[in-house]
Image (tube, rainbow, N blue to C red; front, top):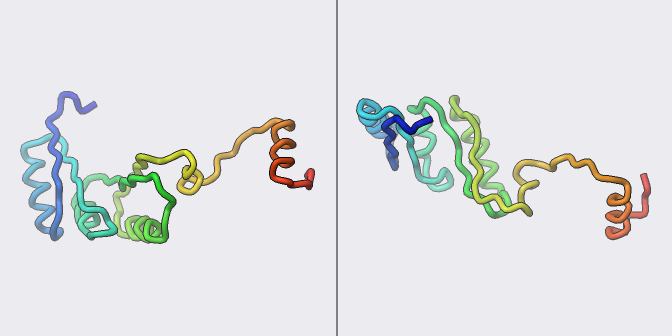
Length: 126
């Protein structure tokens, strides 16, 4: 829906006031301003940019198992950013999907469940 709009992409870093000035300046000449910042594990710039933005998304470049540092980042971001609209997950490998988004309920037929129990040597048939 942005095909007829003028979009500016800013790479931001610095104090909140500097970021606010850059965003305000770009907002005067462009319809939309997209702000990219240093990853939150290295800098607080993302929180500063989120404070001056209309809406925010936290982007995770995945492909690894979620760590305690990721949990702290999510927790800090969720507490500090009031206009959080969600998370963008990219590069998520299927084998790590349950680590990030939780187990997805699946309807399995009886034959598949029995075979899986036999393979895992789970002899409880409940």
